[in-house]
Image (cartoon, rainbow, N blue to C red; front, side, top):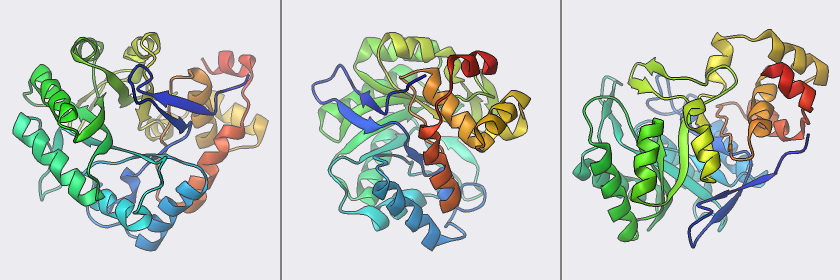
Amino acid sequence: MSISKTITIAVHSNKPLIVNRIGYGTMRLTGEGIYGEPPNRPEALQILKRAVECGVNFLDTADYYGEDVTNRLIAEALYPYPDDLVICTKVGGARKPDKSWIPYNKPENLRASIENNLRTLKLEQITLVHFRTMGGHMNFEEGMETMFKLQEEGKILHVGVSNVSTENLGMALKMGNVATVENMYGHAQRTKVTQVYGETHGGGEVLDLCEQNEIPLVPFFSLLHAIDKKDNRITEIAQKYNVSEAQVNIAWLLHKSPWILPIPGTSSLKHFEENLKSMEIALTDEDMKFLE
């Protein structure tokens, strides 16, 4: 069963972007509780540099990772950036000093977050920004209006959404061009769950809508719940191909839909390089049926 090696972002816009099929999520490069500096800063910088060397040209970050830690690491390791590098950030949330997660989604909050991301990433325009829902009271339509205004002003090239329901996505699609959707999704987690920072919508609820509209689904936490919900079928396929269970989970995403763009994150250079090798695993139709 062959898989596509690349994926197109904002396919219906006048500035589509083609990126390689496995990206890298930087969240794990922070300290404990996704806060503060990484325990091994040299390795964190090495992973980012190695990612670009290996052809990874999609990085996922947020200014509330750290805070600002992953953005600053990206800039330190990679600035000036390669022309084909897509840095995707998120707005809509923030952190308190006690490491708690809070909504930060009013129009003035979103503008402040964009300015902060531009500053810390050393950019004049952010290629892709996800508006993330994060619990609490929010006006999704008002938030999307602000995002599209920021796009008109040239601060954002492409607008995406994160942690959205099918209703949210449907509304966003009526308002403008949605480049990408970032939701929780993985073999072990395809439905809505509740996290410490609010309700989290599963990618399974929106994948069909993404495919219908040719919008890449960027899955987060694709490996997290695989640890909690060990699946013997994954183990069996891993043994069949002599690979790790994490690699099978990523390979499943790649084979599940050509509109899925995995961004497995890790703070280990060894695991990062193992994750990239998931592209080499050719699952058969029988494997996929077995895993379903």
